[in-house]
Picture 1 (tube, rainbow, N blue to C red):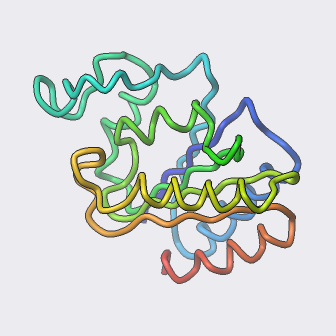
Picture 2 (cartoon, rainbow, N blue to C red):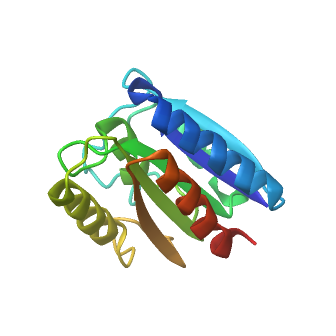
Length: 171
């Protein structure tokens, strides 16, 4: 199975690097090939909400960036994992770009937020907003067939628990 992991290279921390390494190891131990894309602000353009990717040129964004390249091969992935810092209860704008442009697998998308100074309100907001955004995959995320899930890591212990929870999806 092929899995896509997209992370925010501008927001690396010890916690995020540990999380990424553990996720990759867990996936590989369960027979997955993992393609990693570390994206920064200079690599992506934001979605304008023009819907041209749905109408005039399906599957291709008007803004030519790395996300278009990722989307060209999206059908080969059975799952996509997004790693993002939690910023005021939201994912980073860098990670918003591939999410909004439909760069995730049509089978499973997992969004994992991280930060060692997240309060309960930020955590709750992140989980609620991200879950609702991924939701039932209406016009915003066409093609998402199965599910999306959300986790938050605030510690190295959380990283291990998240990887353990991921095993139910990836076998």
